[in-house]
Image 1 (cartoon, rainbow, N blue to C red):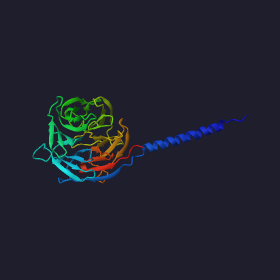
Image 2: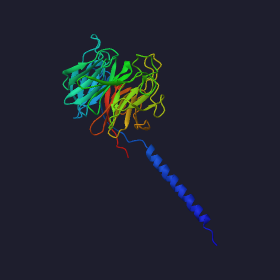
Image 3: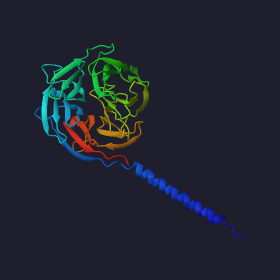
Image 4: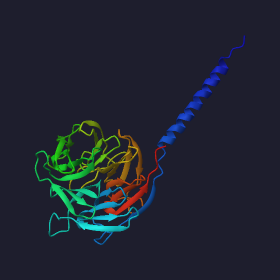
Length: 341
């Protein structure tokens, strides 16, 4: 009687080899970097139209017009999506003898309105897109609705405003009219807490910038803690990831002046596929799943097209192009980002 065992073993071995090759191909495809394409950049250092001195905030309206907070020029500049300068409006200065207004957070609200936060003045202000003040609220303090160094701001799915209250180590939620609705967070390292690696009252740990995904979830960045956190719209802690250092996925170890702290994640934005983009002061933008798995990286350190020096705010237009406030290079950069495979 003839035995089929050798033939069976051979087929089994061939099947295993084929399966291994297939899995290897799938893994290689999954790890292949996204083919990000640099589109354009505009700006250089100065105070003329289209020039910048520390652009840190960035927002787009429903016509894909780009609004930039020009920190050390104490103004907002408006551009079309190709970088053509359209308008400028001045902001109230923090220190009158200097041209400075620490307005970092900015978001377009629709209906021709723009919301800005003022870190030194502890204010939230609503303007028309022409720069006319509509309303403002906030004063320094710790009570609900009071602020201490407000940073990033994002529009919730319900059209309310979430504000990063940096020195109070919390996120506060307001109506568009300025009514306080809710808040969460305190100083600490646990999920839902902020800035625990810095003394209480420091602004260097966060929360810094905020973003929202298609599910309405809110994301925050913490510089000194090198952490991104994810929350429900009501403030329930859902996820977090942290990684100092310069390895892939790491948010960098950057010394701010003489402060030996880790200043990593700064700007944050979420695209229409719920991929989470995070800028960091190790001169790159990294892209993650909502659970914190690294997908790909945009840019590296330098001043050539597609390179960054201390990138800050991030934003998307209706076509899904990414805009980056390349603060250290005094410019805005635009990239085409491919859809997921």
